[in-house]
Length: 154
Image 1 (cartoon, rainbow, N blue to C red):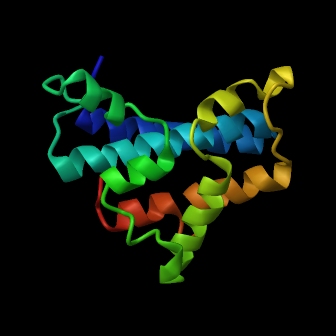
Image 2 (cartoon, rainbow, N blue to C red):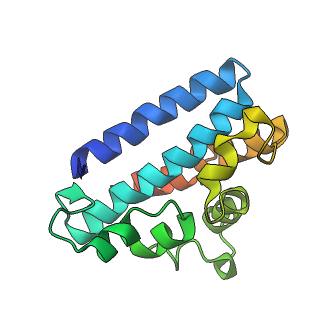
């Protein structure tokens, strides 16, 4: 079921609040999972605005197009959002470094890997790694979310 494009930004903002609450409570495993989802939703909000989509994924797309838009892969979403130059490590910017730090942990099908952490089936992130991911996505002055907000990309 497609989401309305304006809802994507609001969902991302609510997830940021939830992540901050989990971090304050010391629930780093839960926060790590939601940090990944928050980044994904934020990128999808950027894609909606960039492509002038009223819903995500658009109901007028073919099944193959919908599958491409339904990806959880942050690198693919970054390309769809038109941010590959901004977040290219060769740029040497703090934003590019935050992107690199963030995507180191959220590669490919990251969602399945982190979903099962509690059962001991997925990779366990240290508290320090989760704090760094939180900074890279949300808290750092040059975080991914701050870049998206300042540039009014969503």
